[in-house]
Image (cartoon, rainbow, N blue to C red):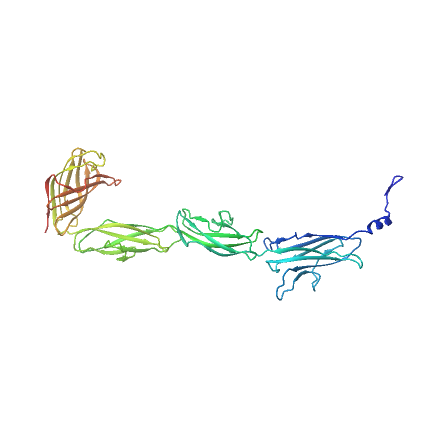
Length: 450
């Protein structure tokens, strides 16, 4: 009380005792929370559990306390922390405030526990006994994660995972597709993984997580593969019954350096079983002609590419061809003006000289409506079939005295003579003229055999 006449603070101790004499003991558990689910080891300090309580009474009392499992485990006593059942674990207690911190790293998960807190009153005074239950969360596991081992560029593939939780908690799935340790690229147990356009070996991770933050991570690898490409030299030119070397070049963009395998198809049967290796020998037969040769290159993931070239087999002793006359050039033949049509004249001779590998002669073709005058300047090869009815030869020349153009002529000496000429610009590969095989309006083609 404060005496107005003497402004000093005084205490009437008898009055305090009288007021406190009727206090009823009161206590409360502050932590852990009721029915809490505690995850051990999620963060560096999460292996510890705090136990806190308060108590109010008129005198200082002792306290008995324990943390017990709700179910028994063989050879493992139920009391895991406290000052009973032979334990003497550290705690703080001043008669009103209680605190203890337990290292729970060895406590069993997927079990309920009870924090039992019991201040001991003097004889004749009522005791209180407080109980707070909680559960230690069991960590989930990733049971499987699967995906195709290899995928091509720019496709979406399904990746999937399965997880399990000993507590039966509902699990969520989140994915890391770019290996940045952020699981923010997809959700769900079976999302689509976009392979993208960059060849690589991609690590894919999944996080399986329960509602309380306990999680497990699984990972797998996917090879995002770019198929190889192959190129081949050619066309090749060789005489009958001679051997030449064919060469192919493969390129594999990754994702890792690998050895490519090469397989060749010489007989055009679709089976690449005639030779192997990047370079191989090819032996021409006894009949002149133009033959298709293909090569297939395959990487270690069984992805392949194929390319075809031609081998021109000529017979320098197989004869020669002459021809002259005219055709009616139909619309579409002259590519610079597809609607143009009219008379076109031609004349040619192509022949191998003795012991020569390049034919000699000259060719001239004129399409008058299109003001196209083609003249040959050199030949490359000549083929006459064994029956003596078909000839084909290739060379180079000019149009109206200018430029550089490749030409090829197909000529038939049969009951009906036919003529075809294709002229192509060597600078850019564009076709200038191609009439297709046409019957002569007038003239003749003669194939001279040996």
